[in-house]
Length: 380
Image (cartoon, rainbow, N blue to C red; front, top):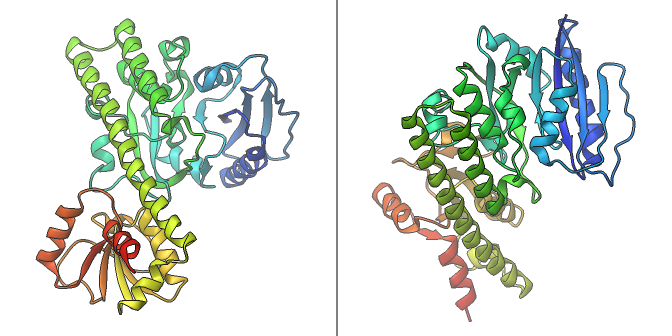
């Protein structure tokens, strides 16, 4: 019987262990005896032991530690102790569908790894900007960026995990998964695309992926490893250098975007502390129904706040409407949008361009969240 090893590094994460066991047990039920599962918790905090765990459906191994190795070192340590024919690396707070392994194995075929789609921050990650089967390619992963958000998307044949990845321990957490895909591609591994959404990536404040300094340093390390490993042509190494430089610039741009969002939230909360609310202001100026441009962080919070306080949110407008699911309609940017009293732009960038595009398609009143908060702030 074939065996699958699920390797989960744990760092200050004992609260996630029961949930992870329950998920893998559900997956084991779905297998119907076709393969066996083992779950390895690799503790990476010597000051917080996990303790023994047991399950009737899944074999569980707990690997304690006497030293912090970082997530790359913890994953490799689990790999050294696992007995599976296939390996799945999960983060402690990840979520997978109960049919994860059935589907991934069905799509793997003769390939060396199967990559599934996912939900990232509550929405589909692959969309018009990142077409799934166009970015899960050797060329894109080497030349553009890492399009695989998390190792949890990928079921790997254990014997295809390259030696260079296991032996090249990164000092900085964050990019060891990109290094893994590069090392696999550099040794001619083949990735199969699974179009099913089987995985949900949860982003919390402690995720290394949002630590910009660590990510930039970690990505520089993988470039150094790629050169030393001598598994790419000089042309591909130059493409990778440019991709890593571009990734650093992208991290900084994202940080700038989050900074703008912070000031929006701060302004919003400050007004509420003064008893000045968006829904109250909208009602006072005769706005009873709105559409929200941008089904993302601020847009979702706006929708929830307005609907809970008597302002009708009729629909979202989003360029990736076909990839989004809400309990109200989500329309692409197009002519013939349903009538509302106000279209409220929830994004913090490209506001002028968005406003211009909207004005070409509709005669509805348009206002950005930035402008709206300024109006409330300036109101007597």
